[in-house]
Amino acid sequence: MPDLQRRLMHLISCNQFRKEDVERLIGSAEENRDRKNLHLQHKTIATLFYEPSTRTRMSFEAAVYRMGGNVISNEDATQSSSSAKGESLEDTIRMVSSYCDAIVLRHPADDSSERAAQIAHVPVINAGAGACEHPTQALLDLYTVWREKGKIDLCYALVGDLRYGRTTHSLVRLLGLYNVKVILVSSDYFSLPDDLLKFIPNCHKVDSIDEALECEPDVVYLTRMQRERFPPHLKRCSNVFSEEHLNRLKKDAIIMHPFPRNEELPKTIDRDKRAAYFRQSENGLWMRMAILKELVK
Ligand code: ASP
Image (cartoon, rainbow, N blue to C red; front, side):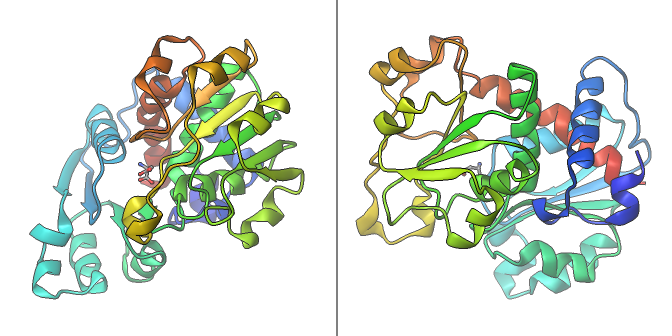
């Protein structure tokens, strides 16, 4: 699958993708479920995380091991790398890129992956850049929709902190490649940044999950309030998905969440078969294998 790699050395933003790239990656992710993929034998991948992570880092590392590769990792780089001694991201990236075949980077600065890509001479994969983007999450999200629903041209309700949530910022860019209807569910303060609305021309805004359910969404994509990114007095979460919402949800709809969850998604919802979020997390492994195969040569 050399296409994406020929055009792009790094994976920085969902703006980089064409529909055929997304579909090729979905096909490749699906193949990984039952076909051996030892594409990373004799390769070393660095995971450099300046922000907390459970699923993204561990699924990337599990993907590397499954593909026969090795991992060097800094899971708490703000504290335990030379960043704590004042080293710049650029200097760290210059060093790390000479030790490995690709860098998986999570960092609080919106432009971190772009800055890293300018320095690195190996592929940089954006594993979360500030409040800006999280492209590998969006790819696994679409893979999940495709697996669960058989298609992506559907009606989506995106709920929660759409202002600071980087997963929805990447997701709308990819949804823009499809024929979708999008309901944006948030209070005014937490609404999706205006510059992202151009990706989803068929969208409208509502305040509550109740209103969103009137449009009969096929996918309800919940997100947590990104409390680490906004002033503490705004901590309130206004949209909690309740049992009552579950009763009103279409029988064949799915509920997704990039996780971690907070109060917006009570555990009582987990037993419903429409709760797709644990399957979604698992899909991260297969999709990240596909991404590594595409970018690491
Ligand atoms: N894990 C996702 C992220 O890193 C979602 C979240 O933290 O809410 O953006």
